[in-house]
Image (cartoon, rainbow over all chains, first blue to last red; front, side, top):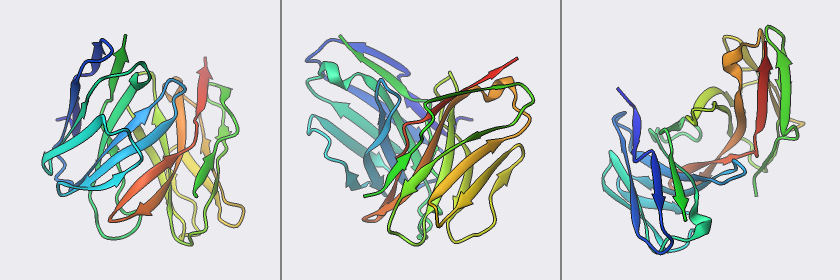
Length: 116
Length: 116
C-alpha cells in the first residue's frame, strides 16, 4: 500500500490553464505539506497544513491555493499557469508529536508539471 | 535564517568503496534535527537517516552513517560498501520549527554515481 500518493504523476498543460494535483496519505498523519523542486533540483516548502488548518505559507503566489478537505488529503490548485510553474511538486506528511523534529516527513512520488 | 550547504554538486565512487558526502548548516537554535534524503532516478524522496542534535552519538542505518559535529555545524553522510543502487541525488536537510508546524530546509543536493 502506498503511504503517500499523488495524482497525476505527470501533467502537461498550456499557459493560462488551471490545474489541480491531489495528495492522499494513509499513515494517519495530521500534518501535510507541499514542496516544489525546480529544474535545478532545489526543494523548497510551499505550504503546510495541520488538521486541515494552514500553518505555513512560504510567500507562494496566490495563484496557488491548497485545499485540505480532511486531514488525509491535501490538494494543490494552480490558477493561470505560467511557464515558471514547471517543476516537480511533492506532497509529504508527518505525525506532529509535539516535539521538535519528531515528525519525520514522508514524501509522495511527486508530480512533474510541464507548462507549455 | 537557517541555511544548508552541500559543497559537492557531484561525486562518484567505485562499487564496494566508501564515500562521504558533506553538509554544513547554519542555525542559532540549540536543539534541532538533521536528515539525509535520497532521490534516485525514480524521483521518489527516500529518508536515509536522521540525527537529533542533542544526541552526541552519530546515527547509523546499515551501510549509512553520519559524522555529526555540532560545534562545527557539520553533518556528513558516509556510505560504506557502495552499491549500484546508491546512485542518486542526496539531499541534506535541516528541520525548522515554524508556527505550529515544521518544515525541512534543504541543501542543493549532491549527485552521487556509483560505478561498476
